[in-house]
Length: 113
Image 1 (cartoon, rainbow, N blue to C red):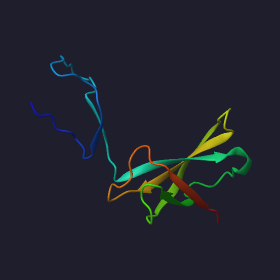
Image 2 (image 1 turned 180 degrees about the vertical axis):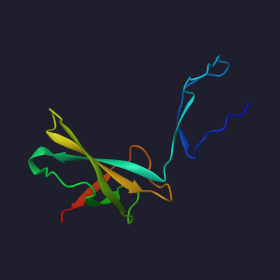
Image 3 (image 1 turned 90 degrees about the horizontal axis):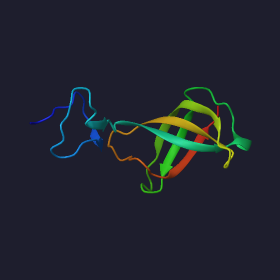
């Protein structure tokens, strides 16, 4: 039987096997919308600044030379990694062409007002 998703996106997880009995409420798929993505940056504690929400960053990715994306600060995680002494900072990035994917590596340059 076909299964229809209530939203548009791509499957990032399939949680079943062929012939498996499924029940109501069982998560079969995880669907992600890649039109807007989150980008995590690791900021060394020594150079960290508590930027205000909405701070803008220019973001470039190694796999997409010559392309630049704009991200807006969404969240600063309150934990410092014990080994690297860095904090995770999350930016929201528009991705209308769906060029950005999970696991890409790049550089984030924060534009401090």
